[in-house]
Image (tube, rainbow, N blue to C red):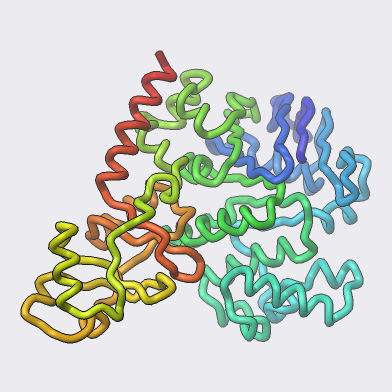
Length: 380
């Protein structure tokens, strides 16, 4: 848990506060995104948690490793910073140190032995879906997205209960940003950290946050609530303008494909013969079908027209699928992906690439209509 209690920050020589009487609570295991225009104090608020900046007034409490709520101003700042994960936009990896040494920065300060650091680093890179042999590489040998994953891994090295993330995906391209966001949300389902996540992007705030803290210039809190409530019930004109007019579409960020997908899609087995496949597709009224093996691992797809008049086995005609969508993907991201590859439907897969369902544009269209109707009903 992180609790702000009437927190104010006034910088020396300034007459107006950077953060003004800020109070909110982040429940344990949740992500709170802090968003607002330039000069709203969002980064200042975050940096007061690990005392890179000290508050002028009020108190900030964090749930420590013993399960006690502690006032950060009563904790030694060095000890405090070593107990809180910190991830920044420009990654901040040491260029002269290997990936192993970068991940081991804080564990080394806490006197972990080399074997323990190695074990933890291997665990983290595996968690980030990266090869263990990357640990012996240097940052310049990795792509931007890979370096950002290592930045996240370093922030999690000592398994801190609280993490601070300052625009962590802002320095990567839009495609990698979306991938990293989805990967982190999947990871958060496992690790359940308490996180303050600073962003300037309301779409990212909606997608990533269990709670959203919207600040105005001068660090004034305009609204603190769940993304769904903020979209349905903006507190005032500022919040309404900041969120934007397309609130029904933004609500698609709140729905995961696993909530609306067809869990029993028409699939072909790679071992089926072509005659069976043609008959199955005619029976289902479909022009193409996805193909799986015995354990539902996706092999690709076949088109009905390519099978007509042919003999043999389905796997002889399989073409690779241009894309797949993880279970935790938002409907907004799913729609974007489908438009990019020009697919009317896409397979939803788990971490082992097993097909768990199918999502199509009609399902998303229905979700948009339901979302708009729900928003109108809540506003009535």
